[in-house]
Image 1: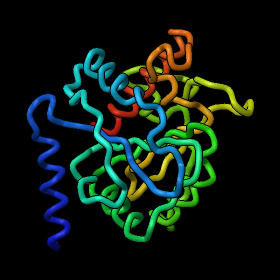
Image 2: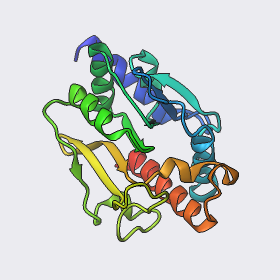
Image 3: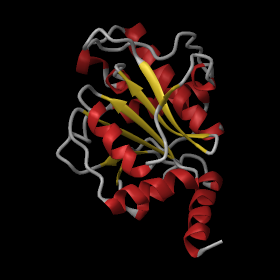
Image 4: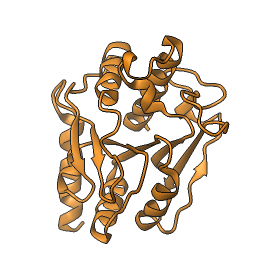
Length: 217
C-alpha cells in the first residue's frame, strides 16, 4: 500500500474509533459562485434529530470543509447543497474521488437549480460512472424509517416527482443525490419555510436514513 493509502486508512480508523460526540459531519464548500452555504440550520437540526431518535452521538457542531482540502478525510459524511453553479478544479475532483473511494460518503441535495452543474462536476470525479436512480426497494429507503415510495416531497418547483440517484463504485454507494425534493429545506428551523410539521418530520426521517445507511453499509 502506498503512503496516501496508509494515511487514508488512518484517517478513517480515527473516525470509526473516535470517542462519543467527537464524530463530525460537514458541509462541503465549493467554488463557482453557487451558494454552498445555503440552509444554515439544516445540518445542526438533522444531527440533533439523529442523536435523539437513533441514539447517534454526532458532534452538534456543523463543520465546513473545502472540497480540495485534506481536512475532507476527517469526516465520514459530507453534505453538499445550493441553487447554482459548482466548479471543481482537477485537484479538487481528484481529492473528492480519493475521499469517496477510501470510504467517505457524499450526500448532495438539489436546492433547485443545482442539477446541471452538479452532474457536470461529478463527471470530473467519476468519469467512468453514471448516476442511476435507486429503486424504492433500496435499503436507504427502509431503515430506520420506511419510505415505500422513495423520497418525500418537501417543496414543489416543477411538478416533477422527487428522485434519488446514486453513484455506485465497485458495488458501494459513494454518493446519494436527492433531486426535486428539497430535503435540506425540510431540515431547517420551522420558521424558515413554515413547512407543516409532518412534512418537516418526514424530511428529517429521510435524512436520518441517509446518515444511517452511510455509516452502516
